[in-house]
Length: 215
Image (cartoon, rainbow, N blue to C red; front, side, top):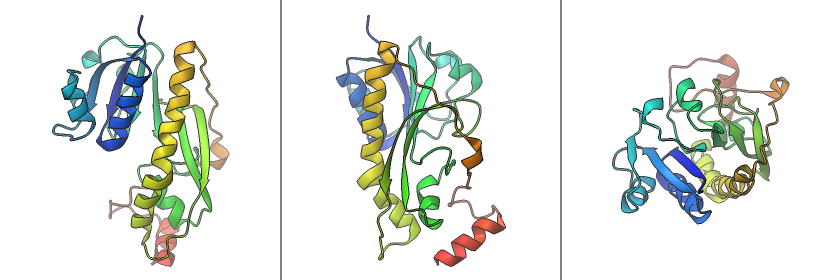
């Protein structure tokens, strides 16, 4: 019997995770992505995989499956949805969790002067990026002297953290169907959470000072 997965994601990273699942021989029961997505949405459509519009995901729309996967998804996976797959949900976050929880994790690692960063495959729970960690890897943060923090974050994602996420998912997709379930609780002594840098009305004096020093 095939291992069944449900994917919530978007863009090229989501497409690559879909392709990886198919390469592993998984049955992708459905995909949740933005309408008109030219990557995972198009790939799913070509293969006849059912598509659910991003922003409308509820538990009753998720077919029976073994594992839920988030891949560059900004949809919140609610409690009932998290319990729908037999084994739960895994997702990729581009930081060394519990450091830099939040949507702008790569940019804040750069703004805060970190020398290393990384990626984490973790099990989703009720908190934002707070679930148990399954797999992690790290990399140096290069100096991008001609780029601002936002541009540097995009470059770091493409060069290092996106390929790292695919490598980590590859490991997870080898282990989890075999019953190898790794869950390491995050150590909240070292946790940080930063707001999305595209939201201008959030005020935290400590982060404001860091941002001023970067400009």
